[in-house]
Amino acid sequence: MLANLIRARFTPLVALAAIIAVVPLVAPSSFHLRVAALVWIFSLAALGLTILMGYAGQVSLGHAGFLGIGAYAVAIGPARFGLDPALCLVVGAVLAGLVAYVVGRPILKLKGYYLAIATLGFGVIVALVLHSESEVTGGPDGMQVARLTFFGWRVSGAWNWYWVTAGALLLGAALALNIAASPTGRALRALHDSEVAAAGTGIDVARKKLAAFVIAAIYAAVAGGLLAAMNGLITPEAASFTHSIELVAMAIIGGLGSVLGTVAGAAFLVVLPQVLTALQEYEQAVLGLLIMVFMIGLPAGIVPSARNWLLERLS
Image (cartoon, rainbow, N blue to C red; front, side, top):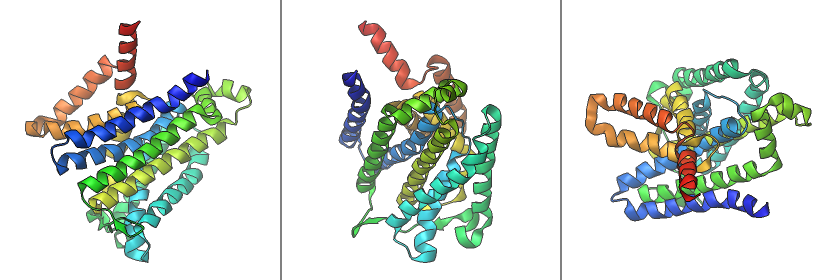
């Protein structure tokens, strides 16, 4: 039992660390390192949905709203208040967590389609505020973002950003795996299967759902802050409904509830559009078709389906 617990906790983390270590060896240019850094950032944001949807079974269609909060905290803090960008990364995570706590208390009483629509409404509100409050956020044109510094070290260049984002992803993955193996993780999985049964065993369902929602928001805010700092520019598009759907798709395509699956889903939706640019006006159509094919052929997700196939061949 203990061996299985240790394996479940550390095997995905070791595999992810190995992937991160190998990518720079095969990446032919700084452009490819930058694309990889984007994969790590969106993987981190989607990991929050892995906890919320994969563990707790709660739907969110406004997750990009929290990504926007974290991104604009890193942009507004230094520009308007002279704060350190690294400090604003933390401030954005705390702010997103507080907003998630306040918003989550009423909307998490809803279930199914009603919960999905409520979270969608939250995301739309955040995007509209970022668009309309031009004096603070720069409006539709967005605003410049100060460079991130850690103890005097200024993060710049594709190589440095690759390792900073990879380190953040590893920390986020370690936390997600620890949550999954903890009593809280088991409680979340119990309410995922049946909230009534979970409540019958003494689990505080409302509290656990709210905790998952807050944790997911913090993941998204940190990812948003890193995205804004790496790009040096942020626009309200970061909090758009389209990005929320993309984050949900990343978690589902890779394998809902799987940490490695989340990374695979993020890689699929970040890298594939770069590959399909040669198709020009057919790019989106082909991307949509491939998503349909993957979901039909691999309904459990990329990583769980691959794992099941391998186990069948070895048995």
